[in-house]
Length: 88
Image 1 (spheres, rainbow, N blue to C red):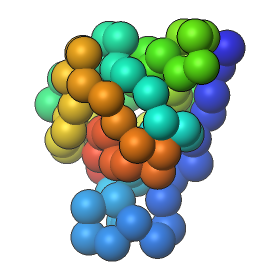
Image 2: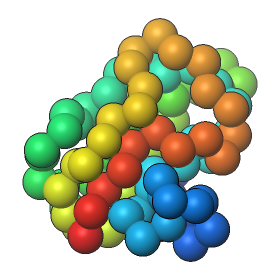
Image 3: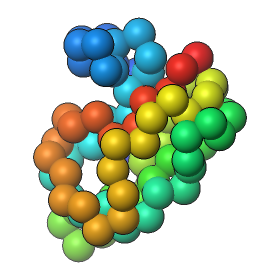
Image 4: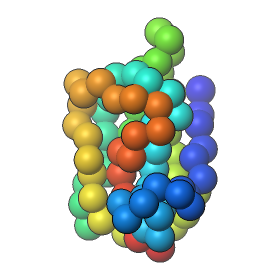
């Protein structure tokens, strides 16, 4: 299943203007497909999140450069948590 996340407009300093990729639901990070400094395209898969026994590809809606990766494979995350920050 593919999940496209819009850039956050209310995430405070971390996610606000930079385009935070947020966890759509609680789950476990299975893999991270990008690293800091990578140039990404809109709708590119950023990471894979396992939730409710399904693997979900989490994408970004904006093109830009990866500024920060806040998670790694194996971590458990909460819904709405900032996972990756992309600068347009």
